[in-house]
Image (tube, rainbow, N blue to C red; front, side, top):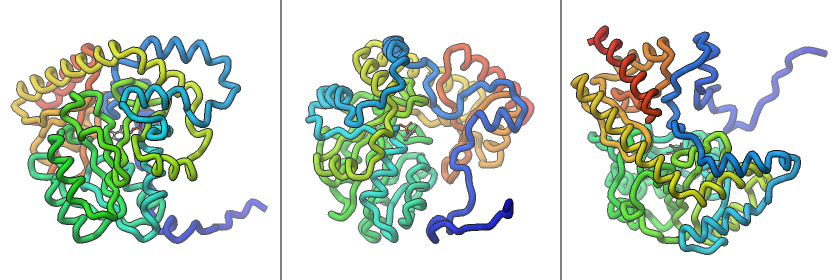
Length: 369
Ligand SMILES: *Cc1c(COP(=O)(O)O)cnc(C)c1O
């Protein structure tokens, strides 16, 4: 009885072509026969988690036989304090990617429209397809910023259930002024919820971000994956109305948030000096990359996040650079859609990693140019 009898998934799942949304560096290592890679492709923190988080998680590791608190109560209380809201305004998930899935599942019915920017952070799109909604997109502005006018025009026409916007954005690194995000939010139709992805909020001044508004049509999400250096722990949170938090409560995976991640996140919040250190080191790293791009005569996008996009003039050259870097043991990624597909995106590494990246890129660029 070892016959392979096919069994079909639900029609909206069958309609999705086979794919691997993110090809991880581990797979690239297996495929390329690399024992290690210079890991600058996934915007992971080069500076690791707070030593206090490591200590707290290590101390509690023997209790990994216990489930974590399904309410993430202590962490939500600390987050509420930090954001000046109530614990009922916070929902914790296993990263923004998880919260994004909950939002699409909760607010975009099968067949409903979800709106995003072509080439921006892609996980939203996979959830939209996976839950049977319809994806609509607008393009970035030519300068690599989100196009608020285009998003408003498309939303006015299509009446999407959800509109996705990341600010600061990935992969561009650009930050729209708070007033522009408010303009977007206020112009959206009443039936559109704004999913405001603030994965990189910690790298910019709070005053340059969307104001601390709690509103039924707004889900703002943050993560411990980037500035807090806990990507592998999988933990993030949404700030929302109590009603929307209750909606998530109905459908979320109640033990989906790792116990150790809750402990590490809580300890990270109690170590603002470390987060500040990461933010200032990241700023230095961006400056190094700007100087590197300048010395190669290549333009770049000023970034408000922990990565920089360098302009190599064409999609073909950018792809060639990315692939050649990989062949030399350097993992970077590049944006997928115009106008950003002529860029290569490199995450801020440690000073030594930045030097190594610069050296390899210089040699490569000399060969190509
Ligand atoms: C990295 C990133 C995420 C993923 O966050 P997790 O909390 O690790 O799931 C989400 N959105 C953007 C824009 C990102 O760059």
